[in-house]
Amino acid sequence: MRTIVIGGGISGLVCAHRLLQRDHDVLLLEESDRAGGVIGTIRQDHFQFELGPQSFLSNATLLELISGLGLDGELLRADAKAPRYVLLGGALQKVPLGPPDLLGTSLLSVGTKLRLLSEPWRRSRPPEDDESVAAFVRRKFGDDLLQNLVGPLVSGIHAGDPERLSLRSAFPALHQWEAAHGSVLRGAMKSRPPKGTPRPGLCSFREGMQTLVHRLADAIGESLSLSTRVEHIKRGKANGHAGFDVHVTRRGHAETLNADALVLATPTQAAAAIAGELSGAFRELLARIEYAPVAVVGAGYRREQVAHPVEGFGFLVPRKEKLSVLGTVWSSSLFAGRAPVGMVSFTSFVGGATNVEWMNSSDAQIAEVAEREVAQVLRISGPPVTSMMRHWPRALPQFNLGHGRIVAGLEKELRRFPGLFLAGSYLSGPSVGSCAEQAVKTAEAVQTFLSAQESA
Ligand SMILES: Cc1cc2nc3c(=O)[nH]c(=O)nc-3n(C[C@H](O)[C@H](O)[C@H](O)COP(=O)(O)OP(=O)(O)OC[C@H]3O[C@@H](n4cnc5c(N)ncnc54)[C@H](O)[C@@H]3O)c2cc1C
Image 1 (cartoon, protein in one colour):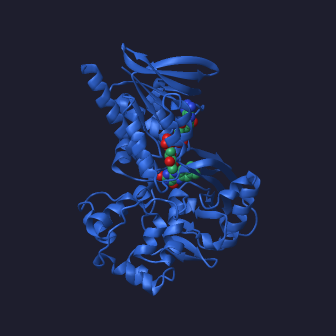
Image 2 (spheres, helix red, strand yellow):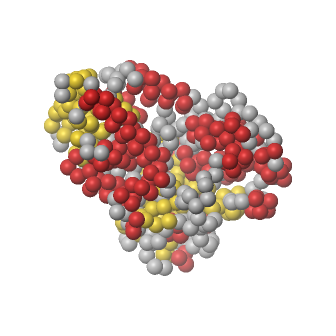
Image 3 (cartoon, helix red, strand yellow):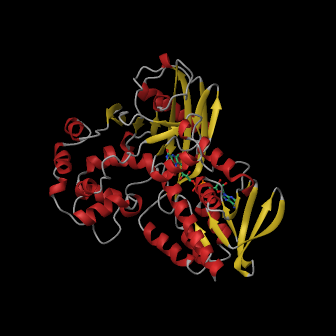
């Protein structure tokens, strides 16, 4: 029984790898000439820059995968206490990480601080309808928390607009804690993992994020077919059972492959094009998921060019500061080996759902504005020693109001096509860790399906 996985980003790689580990016959088809999707690392003038994700938050699935691939020795963990900053009135303010910092911060009013500290004793219930992140924060805490902290954090994670993001889809734990305990803080305390459980932390690899996708591609070996674009799929026969015909263009030649099970692990636009002939409902549902554009701008400087201290994670920018930059990671402070000795490097993000008009500018304009804005905040003199830019017109899926209904609709439609499965960043979360968890779940569902087919 053959499974074809379409799309060789982290979702498709993890799904195919898991199925191979369980001795299944798998073929992973990837359109481009490299695996990894948006994950990639480049080396330039002795600096190391990430093209997409800068790091990942460890979870059990990723840590098990990393160990299994023999990558424990390559793993780098960021300092969990590294301070993060928010730009307010042109100056960087430390993000409070606990109650003592919270009392002292100038990011929040006294009223909001009191509402935060007293929240466990003020029971509330979430509304029946899907609620936006912004409406939730205003209802429970206050507008300054939204403007100065939650908005910038939401930009940092989803490149999203808090007025449109759905709380229960984008931050399901917060919704569930309020629903179950009447308080998010009480819910968070009750859901704390048992003592001794390793805490999730920000990680990367010595040679950058591409280490993970390269090692997965190596482990998948000949079952990975690069430069193979899937055009569309149809119902067909495989091994005498109902299956799928997969129409591909491999290195310029059209071919039809057969599969008993099929996993679509591409972003929604490609998934809609591939499965659109099979189901108009798929096409319509997938088209309703919006993506936010993001440009990644990296720059390296000599240490003495930067007057502002840059020890920590970096800074986020509230929209009211009217900058094009959403935030800047101090790459060389976060992980060793990102810049040569005596140099520092930064990676900034421009665009997002609240700033889409920026994406009509040329790459050179975006890079120039990002460089100028960061130079102003960090008091940088002179041009960078090196710089890079990567524009992602469809970087991150938006878990906007109604997202839950779209995913439920997709699940319902999947039931009409036994053997067809989905994986990807638009289903249960865009982070590398969520994509890996979703991919493992999908691989398990494929296994269950194939076992049932075999015994039928
Ligand atoms: C700029 C940026 C910054 C990010 N920062 C972080 C971060 O710091 N931490 C974090 O955890 N996450 C981050 N993310 C999110 C995370 O990286 C992504 O959500 C995740 O990597 C998506 O993986 P994927 O496999 O689902 O999709 P993709 O990486 O998009 O892979 C899909 C693959 O499908 C292939 N494909 C498409 N169409 C076809 C076709 N017709 N036939 C065959 N193949 C096809 C594509 O070529 C691609 O390789 C970031 C994302 C971006 C873009």
